[in-house]
Image (cartoon, rainbow, N blue to C red; front, side, top):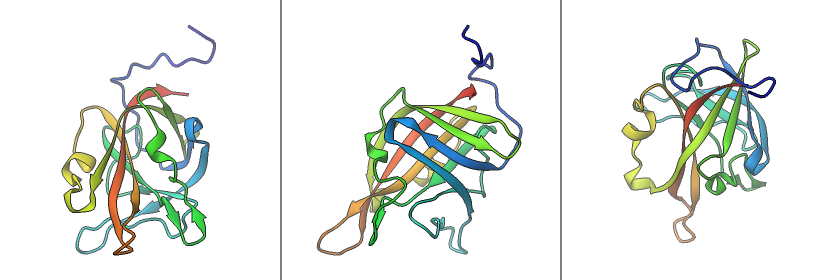
Length: 163
């Protein structure tokens, strides 16, 4: 095993620690993370700025047992957002989450899907996947006629140890 490689099995989970940063080498993303919550109707909020991703703090932290969810903007009137290239991720790509306790949780992408906004699978995205999973969610694009978001991109990743 290479020096510094994790000996943690993929079935292991971590204790709760606030996620503070996200690194996705495959698409050139390195960002701070902010907490996001949900409204009275259950709708999950997005980060206030397009260049920072948000962790939905109503669920597990990345690395903890359960499904952690990060959300980010695809773009804004000012240009590309933090998750502009999210759709380019492929199975096997690595995501790394910096945590407040000084550890880093690694996740491996196992799927990328695009869903119409009207058929967003909230139970699949926020529901249990076994062990520790991470879903990244962003808009898929804006309908030119309605000027509203018409789809969402979701990246599904499983816990792959610590860095």
